[in-house]
Length: 74
Length: 241
Image 1 (tube, rainbow over the protein chains, first blue to last red):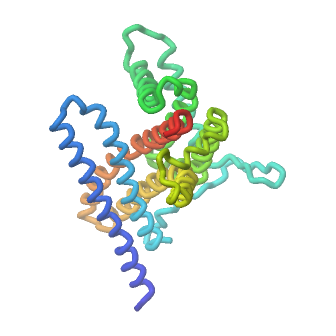
Image 2 (image 1 turned 180 degrees about the vertical axis):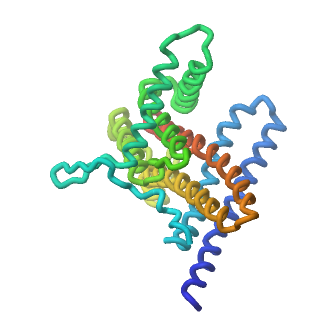
Image 3 (image 1 turned 90 degrees about the vertical axis):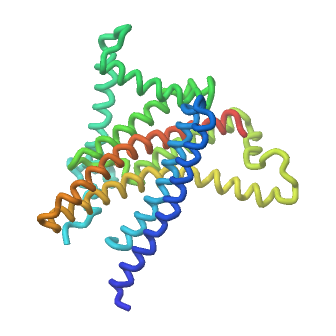
C-alpha cells in the first residue's frame, strides 16, 4: 500500500476515538436531565459538576483529533 | 496546499536577548502574555477605581469573576482555602485571558504550548505536595493507601495511587494545551477550505462561526477546569481523603 494512502487511513482510524467522547457527552447530559427532572432544586449544584464532566470528556475527543492531525500534517 | 496548520504556533523572537548562553528573547509568546496581564490588570484596577454600592457594568464584571473564584474555593476546599485565594485567582485570570486573547485573530495563544501549561501545572503540583507534607508530616503518605484496604492488595493499590498522583501535572498540562491546540488547528483548516471551495465557500464559514462559539465555551471551560482541579488537589492535601 502507498504510504500516503496508509496515512489517510490511519488518520481516519485515529479520529474514531471521537465515538467514545460522543457516548460520554451523551451520558453526561442525559444524566444531568434525569437528575434535574427528579430534583429541580439540585440544578445549580449538579450543573457545576456537569460542566466539569463535559470538559473532561470533550478533552478526550480533542486528544483523538490531535493524533489524527499529527498523522495528517506531522 | 496552504501553509501548515501548525504554523501559527511557531515562537518567533521579537527582541533577541542572550543571558549567558541561554536564549531569553522577548518572543511573540511573551508579548501575548504581557497583553493578557495588562488586560486583566486594567479590568480589575480600573473597574473598582470608583467603587459604588450599586455596581456599574465594569464593576459587576470584576465582582462576578471574583465571586466565581471565591465560590469555587469555598465549595471545594472550605474556609481553609481562603489563604490560597490570591494564587488561585491569579492562575484563573491568567489562563482565562490567555485563552481569550488567543482567540483574537492573528494573536498568539500561549496556553497552547505545553511548556507554559506544564510550568503552571508543576508549580501547582509541587506546591500542593509541600502543603500536604507541611500540614500532615509523614502522615501525608497515608494518602497513597485508602483506609480499610486489605493488606493483600495493598502493594498493588499503593503503586496505582502513586502513579495516579504523579500523572496529575501531566494530565493537567496536556488537557489545556491540547484543547487550545486542536481548536486553533481546526479553525485554520476550515479557513483553508473557504478559498479552496470557491463559490460555496460560505459553507465552511458557517462551520467556522459554530466552531468559534464552541472554542469560546472551551476557552472559558478549560480555564475553569484547570483551576477547579487545582482546588481539588489542594483539598486533598489539606483534608486528605
